[in-house]
Length: 91
Image 1 (cartoon, rainbow, N blue to C red):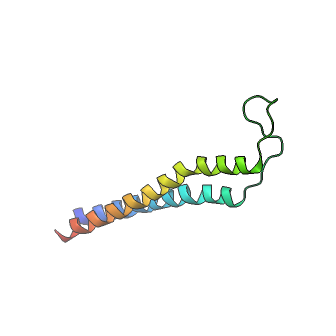
Image 2: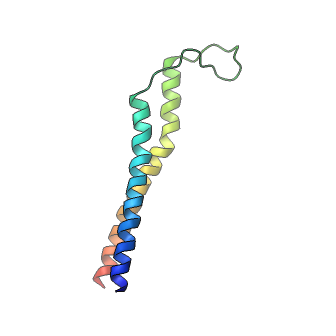
Image 3: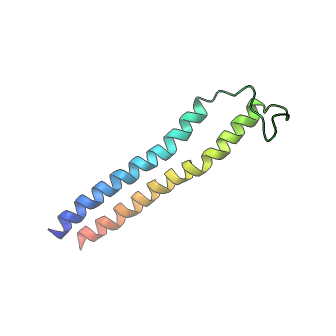
């Protein structure tokens, strides 16, 4: 009975972890794919010159690195949990 409850808990936990990992990867990738530069976007003061499309894209990519890394980390954690859970079930 204990292993059955543990199995249900681990399946739910890994499902949530994997779904979160997919969201953390997919949402920033979609933003990069569907990127459209803003015309009048400036950095700091409104009197500064507008940012170029390349600068806007670079900022978007840099800001997307942390969520994408978190999604990859969630997948690695899920694989680690599956590995240890299988060894738990073999005991």
